[in-house]
Image 1 (spheres, rainbow, N blue to C red):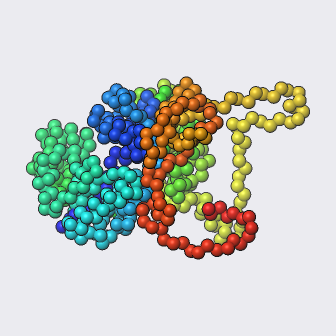
Image 2: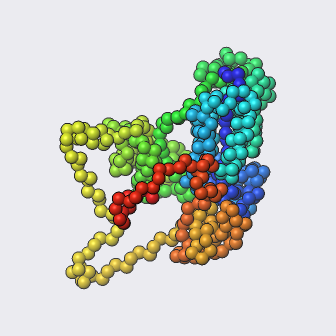
Image 3: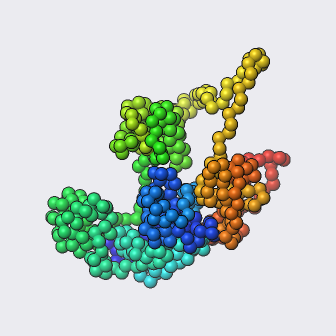
Length: 490
């Protein structure tokens, strides 16, 4: 383990909720809960004001509403959070080439590898500068932990919350860890914590006193050895710049159990398409298709099918999930469905076939014909339309306005959805840099109201990059090669 505190752990404070408060002036200083709003939804993040009522992440949303009935309940905007995360990760990468993201709002950084810290004072100055830069670029706050190991840096950032910095001096680790509860250590969840408590072990000091042999007897060889080492503050894990994804998956929990077999099949196909989109966005493909079904009685079934080669073809994934669904008994109802792909690779079986064709000089084959779109009415000939009355077009589906999402009105400008129902949608018109705005109500089908992209929390000056640094000057403009052309690069 190192002798200087040059491993940094950053954890953004109540990230999703803080981002919502920063983008909505009327919610600043108030209880905000972000998560699924249906009867079976769970809390993703709660603001510190909501936590004062006992609301916390992973809590059922129904319970959160009972604890904090007057809080603002919002649907997550993951695209918005991802944009902010990219700004934060960009700041971290200016400090070191070794940045290990754990999630959108959390990462380890090896400051020594970046040459920006070599002792306690330089590490502290770097951490304070990082916190100031994050606030300047994103308008949000993050807590920083500094220590000689990843485990201790993460513990330090937790101690620093909210909006603080804690540095653990090398040599003081055992004294700091000793009185802490066993759940402080990584890998000690509720089950392991209860098992240790029944054995009379409730603090980290008591883990060390119990000894390695006793922990192995209680928890097994691997877990017992690892937990004993952590209790002695031993952690040699390096900061790894790239964490290889093992799988890509999506799932949905339904407010009402699904019983119709056709509806279940359609939901599985929709999830398969979403999963493939995520694969392609990450530039990946996979060999093993996994279907997850949680039934009405909370029993969870998984079925998998391994292909001959990796694919990112939505038709292949849809076909595989349909086959897997045939082997699952959905009698009684389904409350959750999920589709995943594992055995990931950065190429597809189709790519290999294409390379082989190019190597032999063959032209690539044409795309297979697309199946007819069943959602469109069949085209009728002039004779048919003359003999039979035309069917009435179905009424358009009611537009869905999600609480917290951005909208723009032709007259009132930018705002966000405060709530909707009974054919009406309520919008509060405000922006991140405006005073709290007024609330107005419209019909859900009002043509003047449209979805909008989120506004940046901190408006950037012209010529400034997303990390707050001046952008490097680009090459001088060149004369256009032709009039009226557009190569799509704008």
